[in-house]
Image (cartoon, rainbow, N blue to C red):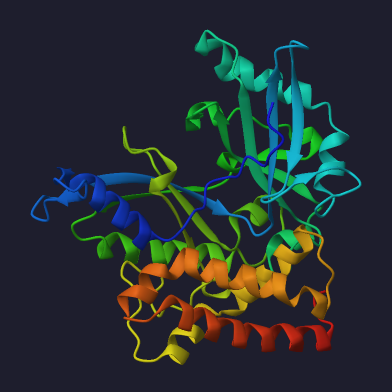
Amino acid sequence: MENKVFKFPSVEALRHVIQNVSHRARYTGVDENGDPIYDEERELPTLDFRGTVKLHGSNGGIVWQWNPLAFEYVMQVQSKNRILTPTSDNGGFAAFIYTKKMDTLLAKIMKVHGDDLGYTPQVVRLYGEWCGGNIQKGVALNQLDKMFVVFAIKIDDAWLSDDKLAEIKWPEEGIYNILDYPTYNVTIDFNKPKEAAEKMGKMVEEVEKECPVGKAFDVSGVGEGIVWACTTKGWEGSKYWFKTKGDEHKSSGSKEKVPVDIERVNSINTLVDTFLTESRLEQGLDHLKEMQHEMSRKSTGHYLKWVSDDVVKEELDTIIGNGFDVKEITKAVSNKARKWFFNKLDEGLGL
């Protein structure tokens, strides 16, 4: 058994999925140097996507690894970046899970899917959002008790299909399933994705205006956005998942509701202002809390590293596409993020 965090895949923006789809559809092989060859004249596919409400909380995971010596599964609770215990927790998630008889939920997963495999799965991963209460702020879910909402399950190397995933829940114990709430559908012609982007933009506006999950629990307030997964056969992998967020929760200040191209700007300062939205800077604070770093200037290095790494991870195409050097951008990002962090500490807000 491995003592590591089984991370949930990074879900990025539509423009990144456009690149992934284009590369796959137009790839024809490699040249004599081993470099990929693409046929830019090839038509791109039209794919179907299913959207679920994006909840503003903290990513949580439950991992069961098969121990052949004990002939049983061993459970691990994790946040996005580290293994959790009730004494080294993240917003009370581990304490919540360890009070439940989670073997019951594992048995249900195995009944739904495991019996079809014909062998004993080595790793079963259940992912969801730990949300409600004081986990985040400014959304409808703050008015509810803390809860765990399942949104994906992976058995060894295969993601559970929607029809099977939908069966995994335990509402009596505060464990729900995202597929029990409104879902959305869109078809994207990747030769002209802006048409679908406009439709998704309107859907996101509605979710931000009134969170459908909050409404299902009879509370009203702001929602975060929608997460999209491709449902077309052969394209279901996580490379073809993306998120669309409302204006209050965007990590990048794009003028378009759902950008399909990189943002075009003329100066470093303008680009950095686009990257460093309030949402991204707040996410840096969430990372410090998750990793149990002290909320003081002693953690400045950790904070700036997370913000800079996140910018490079999600915005590298925009940086390169605008002709800027990554180092000069990260230096400008760190300077601005440092001022924001120090101001936030001085104000003592949200910490």
